[in-house]
Length: 180
Ligand code: S3P
Image 1 (cartoon, helix red, strand yellow):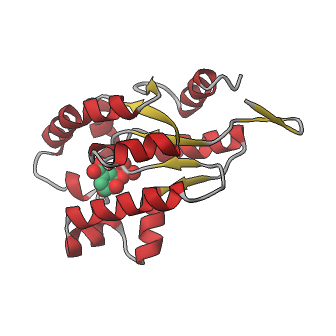
Image 2 (cartoon, rainbow, N blue to C red):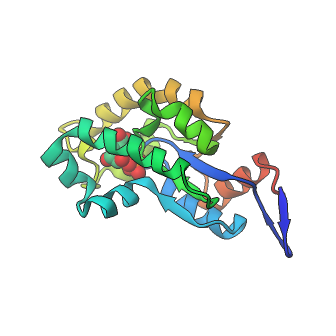
């Protein structure tokens, strides 16, 4: 913990990982006010760099091409001096090569959500290409089972988010980071 004027902040980057719909983006925004760090989302950075949405990248180039862009983005972030909060795409920690990159980039917080929570939040979403299938609930369960170990292995801290408000989750993050 560092003191900057009267404000409390945290040294280094804070990385939010977790499944689609686990709340990385909203939690990242709320956390950014509390720790006074700019928040950025790697999906948004990729979309901006490409001038296309994630869905367009998946449709035109395929998932593997998108995964390569994610890894490139992590390498770019590692070269930056600014200390930020980064929320990263739900699949990022799954690629083995990305796990040490994420860990090196900063303190990794895993927002862990159950399949039911995710399904409830994303059942009408059309922006996640991996969930545009006949049985999105089954797909979420399958992907969560495949990915859980990778998320846990990458995380410095795990926060269970089911049935918690964004504010409660942020308070827990501040507490595990010993910011308060
Ligand atoms: C993905 C998660 C998405 C996005 C892409 C693939 C995944 O990000 O990167 O659709 O594999 O879980 P969010 O976790 O921000 O939805």
